Image 1 (cartoon, rainbow, N blue to C red):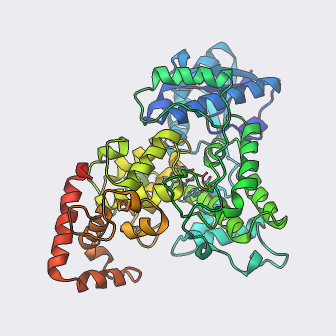
Image 2: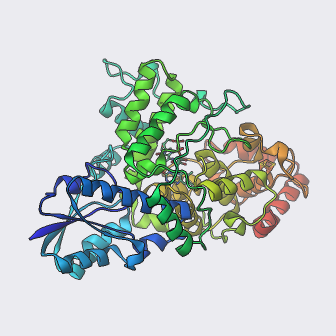
Length: 509
Ligand SMILES: Cc1cc2nc3c(=O)[nH]c(=O)nc-3n(C[C@H](O)[C@H](O)[C@H](O)COP(=O)(O)OP(=O)(O)OC[C@H]3O[C@@H](n4cnc5c(N)ncnc54)[C@H](O)[C@@H]3O)c2cc1C
Ligand code: SF4
């Protein structure tokens, strides 16, 4: 009797707990490209190409290491992962199934509640040790403070991991957080590194054709496809980032540029989330660059905070709050998602740029996601489920455990302030300060009440006004409400009327 080890598309790590618990002489690995996972949202074609190609490369690597692998390509026509296990169990005597716990609540529930009955055998779920904070540790942390703020979680993670901590247990440089130094606007110097491109090998080329045939109706350009698809290439991408971009990551972390889609961002999330890179190896590589004098502290601390802090924190929140989290909608946002998110023409330059980058690269950097497409969705009161499904579909790094808290919590404030005490709502001024978009836009960022006024300005005040009851007494928003109240009543009426019209007619944006 052998055991089956199911390896999921985002579990492409050699030291996965399920593989470590198995015996390569007797047990069989099962991997499958199935319809259910490939189409529960209309994933960007580049995301599907990346995952199928990276899975095929990983399966080949496992075979080289002596594993027996049942690999079901998309053409095998299997509907679900459970069907794949069933198929393997039919041809081999199987005693048990080993699986490293999936990242997504939906799949975790299926594996616990449905699969044992469907398959008629037991399933052993193992912890996913690739993360730096276990579910149990996060729950314990969350049972302490009244407010679950990322900053405090992050400090604890710094102490636990020893990253950027002195021998006496203090933060290196004397401060935990260098965010205040990380808000520069980018004026073209220093030059941004050219994005690293990997050429497609025969495996990837075959997958590109498959995806073009089966998923051409999904939003997004399948080609050019330049992602890394195996661990070796992902390690090259990590080194490239450390050498060429990390030194300026901090300064320009919040900047946006018409001419540079990626600026100094790492583009590593897609590899990290699929398991080709591990969070600790990335953080250690960044820390080492600082210790060697190759990158400044504000950059390295800012970068490590994203991975050790934000990434682990949103995962913890997801598992703490699911499944109810999915239905939260504290601001009652229920407007339909405007067609411009799927590429319909818009005269808003900031939005057009973010959607173009998304279509071309299956990537947009954090500030575009948060302050452009996210901010617009918040101000327009877009239905939380619709915007969640959009973010889940269009980015190559999107998995519900990381995407949902960012969208529902950080962007839409739908969790009522669990993730951020106040909404990230912003007017066009923010975009003007952090980018060169406004100089090349149809709209005028300096006004709020005219036909050509920046829509974000009118919508911002509309948002402030329509949520007055909820936020007027919020200590960090009181000043905004005072400015709104102080405005001439006629002007206020005109701004609100324009905001209301845009709110009801987003197709005109
Ligand atoms: C609405 C919205 C949806 C998002 N959806 C996803 C998603 O589906 N998958 C995803 O990995 N990230 C998501 N993010 C977080 C962030 O935007 C991406 O991780 C980042 O843009 C990936 O590009 P990068 O690798 O160049 O990141 P960098 O800017 O180079 O940052 C380094 C790493 O830090 C981590 N990180 C940074 N910010 C966050 C964050 N807020 N939450 C979790 N990890 C973070 C990522 O692993 C990233 O690779 C989302 C953010 C928002 C506002
Ligand atoms: S003017 Fe407004 S819509 Fe145009 S780019 Fe600036 S912020 Fe965006």
